[in-house]
Length: 137
Image 1 (cartoon, rainbow, N blue to C red):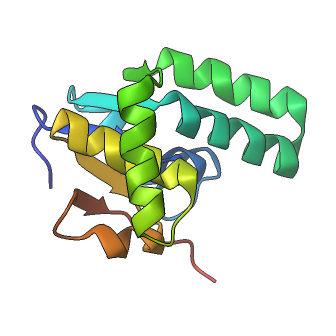
Image 2: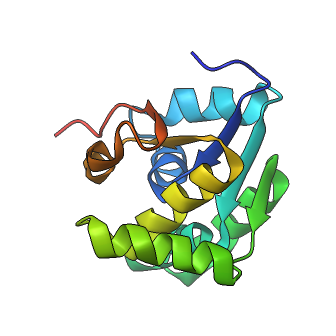
Image 3: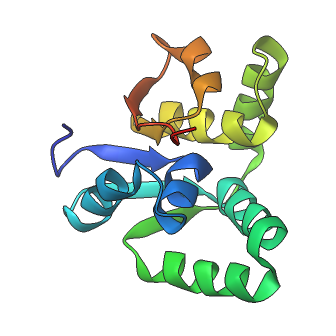
């Protein structure tokens, strides 16, 4: 378990699991309430938004965005340095560009990525990862 002073970058997987009440939801809630320092790339925030639109419609996506804004998550805008760091990862690994932003931000902030997305397995040893349980099938 991470300490409350741990710096964490939330991948879209984490918040989607939380809002969909998937198996990882309880752990994500703990993270959001434990007083730790949480970050999320604006790219990953957009990913949560568009995936919510696709599954539940625009009204629910707007509601989720409003809820995100109320949680202790610092949303980090993308600058050239972060975009190129994510691009380097994308050029090297087979994972989504959005995931590369979460990983690059974690590297930049010396933080732990919180995710259950198996694509991040490629980055073990390069990025500290807290693994969330995947959705039960």
